[in-house]
Length: 472
Image (tube, rainbow, N blue to C red; front, side, top):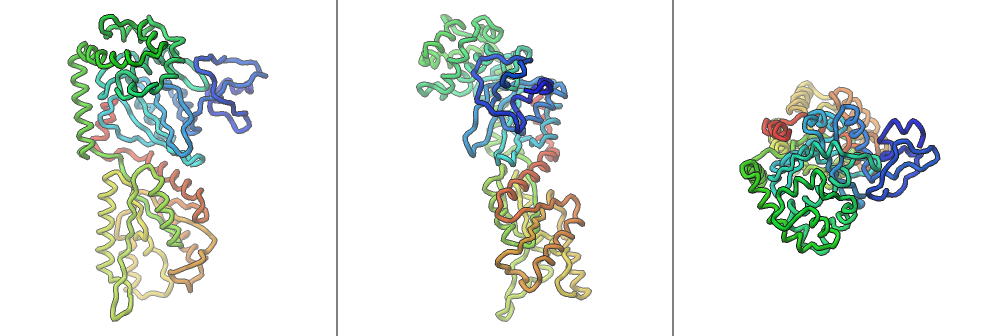
């Protein structure tokens, strides 16, 4: 590690390209803050690189944070999920930092003090889910409070390039998650997280701060020492019998607050399941390109890989037949079709979907291939401005002509391409992407551009804004 790297605590978890990547550091190990120059840097935890600027900005903005649970390497093709504990008073600052770094807020109705943010890494083609918790609550409906989050943030430690819980806190928070959050976790043999609990039990303290909180709610004949011994001995049957009794006693001691939280979160989940609460905010995108096949292929790829569900909407009216000849649709039919499909797209967008518009009204703003009369020019002016602007306009630019051209093959492809490029300069905030159709980089770059716009836009529903306030 270079001497200047010591000034950047995140240089270990997000090393530069010329730094040798090592394996995972053993759990429970300590990391020296000033290692000798010749020593290898501490092994980083497997976090996605797009989290690097988020955690750096947390530090610079004075946001206290730490990871809840040790990160594990996600399987190939799977989304990465990370849970972090953040100081409740700094949640608004954390939201601004996350949105500035391309993480979009996703509503989590009925999940208690948990805020979800999603980002996209085009280099790995992976969605990164970061859940921000402001309080340590347990139970199926987050009804059981611990009031221990402040102490956990005070005792956090720097390991593997990130802030993590102290070993004692990590053991008790994970054990409470297994006992109270999901009863099915103890059903398997060995249960989930068994090896991690056994590893963390080495440094677990029966008289620690979190252990004293748990001891106040344990039934008779149970102590925190007995809990640690059960984990050591692998007596999961005894812990499975303890789980419902512990939840009942905890709820009885916190009767009114626990019932209030349980009712509120249970109601929010039921309303959300019945689609009575606002879904994630949607987005509309207009695709423009001289090659229709490239647009159709890109829309299909977005529908397969985008985080939000995708609706494909073709704006042009179907041609009509007259005396056995196919002719273009009339003016009023085209105008009606455009508005009908635009309003349909707006309705799908309000349901939290990504609406991809093909053959948008902007195509009528292109100069005609042939000299048009005054009436024809007026027709193109009206149709080209018939519908409001979408949220994002993407222009696909590829200098290579397609092998098969069905639309106006008599016009040189370069001429059509230049007309679309000229149109992009007249459209505000149009995104021009230069990549050959079918290239994986094209879909990744467009996904990143769309998601960056999505993350920067404010929530459109007052209920979503109210939900953000309730999570503080």
